[in-house]
Image (cartoon, rainbow, N blue to C red; front, side, top):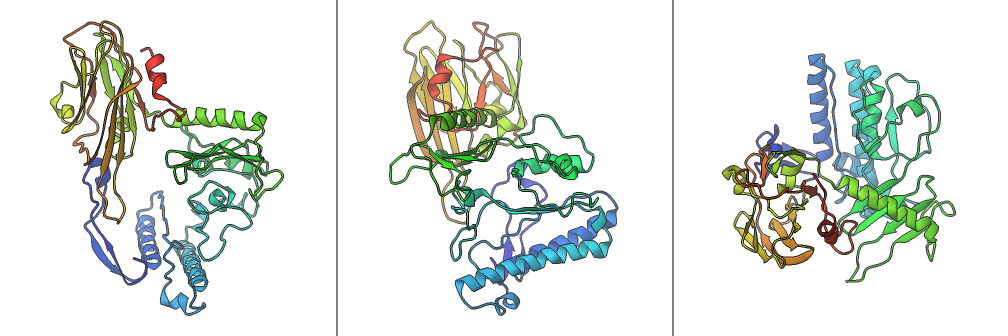
Length: 449
């Protein structure tokens, strides 16, 4: 809570990768913004005493709703919704100043790289936080996504610049690495802009993409002049993508209607290529020499917590999980012409229509964990597709528990050698006729090993 007493409880789930170093729940009197700052100052003092490089990541809840500033700040503003919002912003700014002052007191400010950035636009509840840009938190317009980023560099060289080029938060990680002389790992989605800022030159621009839910997305062209926006369905109605001419109107209020195909089609194609790239879960598949293989990787095991979708494209012999440690979670088998997919206590099944040929088996699962304070059950939506057609689906209130997410998954049965099973394709996505990855694609063109 914002004001009064904060209670930090144990995490609801005890999966290995969620446990971390969370301490038992404790009671902290006061205002959340002040409590977070007090803890940060304590951590900075301890880290500095150790004399080793450190990194601190602090996310303030302010100025999120409800607007309940501390009494010391509320009394300086009118007792209105707008006044309380302004007071809460002031309180957050004041606490950022406390952190900067503490770094100076410790004598490490000249060796510290400081970044202040928001995650999205304001909610526009009592004031248009994002004016003149159109949009608010939860959307994908200009006002929904644009936010300032403030960086103070320890070497002082790039400081004092105002850069109008567009970057994404995904660019922050490689930028910080380069600025401290650490090699940037290959394969990151983000690109460092440190060299460009240090040399006073333009920042390299690229297309940017966003998603909100499963049916709403946006793309920004390389030159920043066009925004593609697919708004979510509303009252059962679905809409064609919108195209906004930001070159004509930077606020994002002017639609190109009807959208120019020469602009719209390339942006759509770029978005779909990006979608396919970022929704493919990284795993390691090692053939075993008998037609099957093993699948490992923490990304694969994360299906118990991050709402992914799993897809197997198989040949005439189907994947099975003979290891009892993983069989309790996931199992697919074939008996005659019947395909059975087992998820804990849930069973889906369907019939093969043409025996003696290769078949594609696609299993999808949408796992919703309730991590909010609202009392809602965990839910799972499961579907089994055989050769592109839906065989059976189920929705239930439950959660799949994974005792050890690092266990390998066995594909095929080493005791039987009848055919080669194609390498599995694992996606964190929702498949359907309107998605960039339709189910039919996995039936018509399975990937070879």
